[in-house]
Length: 67
Image (cartoon, rainbow, N blue to C red; front, side):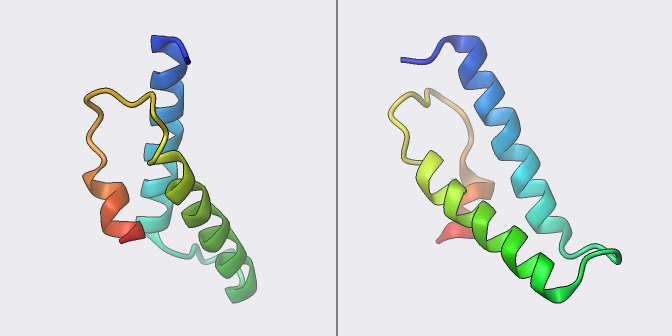
């Protein structure tokens, strides 16, 4: 079981990915690069959101992306 600090770190990373996806493709990214970036991150979000260590973290933004 992860420590409280590790859970906070995972959640911070999760929120960073959500923000990145919600911001959309940057001007510097090509279409293929964005496709790879968003697809791999959404796949990770689908996996991590089901982890059994979450406590009261708000996953609303994640579910808006993955559902």
